[in-house]
Image 1 (cartoon, one colour):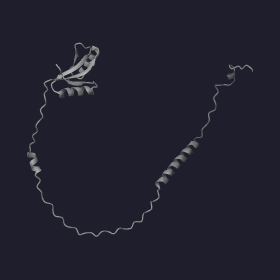
Image 2: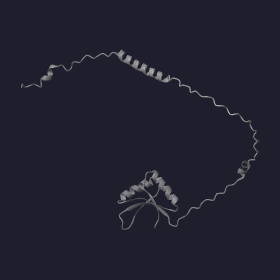
Image 3: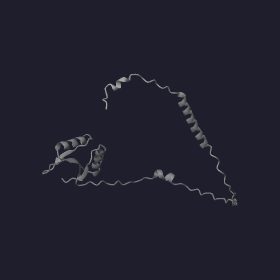
Image 4: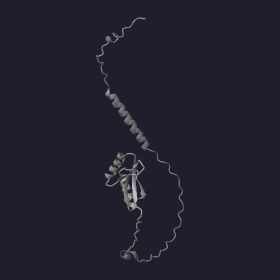
Length: 178
């Protein structure tokens, strides 16, 4: 088997020479486009020309004999009383009294192992315009973020919904054990 010189093999051809560009014939693509549009139009035309459906043979039904119309009595004239009586009416509503709990409500918005985490949550709550406190229970290593005390549960719920809209969750409402 003879040794081949792979280095000199590619030098014989001129790589810089450009091949002559093939000229396209634009009339061919135009003719094809016209034929396709024409075929599409013909298809739409044939679809729109549905043959008329055959008319069914219907035998006329005998018309019932019309009965003489009985004269209806005239409706009675009713006096509408509500037009005059409504403006003179007075509605009395008793408001339900709110139950005031003897024990106030508190809301806890997290318990954290480090005071820095609790301070960060307290800061998030402060940006919503609500005051909170950090409490550490004796004998525990947890820092709780607490809001309140609230006299009514409704006030605590209002603040909890405000925090939920700010994506500060979870917050739980309890009766205080102070």
